[in-house]
Length: 203
Image (cartoon, rainbow, N blue to C red; front, side):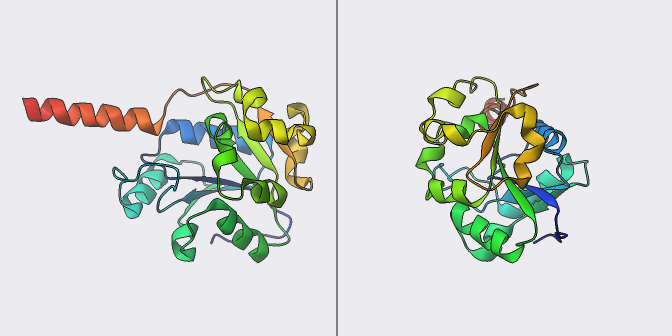
């Protein structure tokens, strides 16, 4: 676990990052700026219970790729879940928060994840544990109004004009940040890679 100083504002950005790409970096850059964070910890997971892991690259490879695309030293690449042997975000967050009670943590997710957040294990516990910042993604803006979790938590939503206050608020609290969006996705990059491999084999 990276060092965390007392009172620091730290974003937690989890995912399989299979592979990581500039869209992930874009989300973190938006969060660093809009939430006035000191750090963002990338929580590279061994595997996502909601996703097919048959095409999942080895953890060490994904960690190295994440390191290679994050030029900002405020982005720390970690494999905390592997060390904890935890499969679920709620368990990981409980451990991080309990180990660093004097820090202000924020869970960061793309708007595409907001649409399925209600399917996450103990998602309500996550919302009660740390504030949440949702970053707009192409084709996912309607999740702000249609996602079951967004509807359940609508009275706790902070106006994005006040987003810099979010890390200091008691959960449940969340905000939706609009702005420049990246169309890159890990799914599309894997599909393109597979197509290139097939074309090479055909030749």
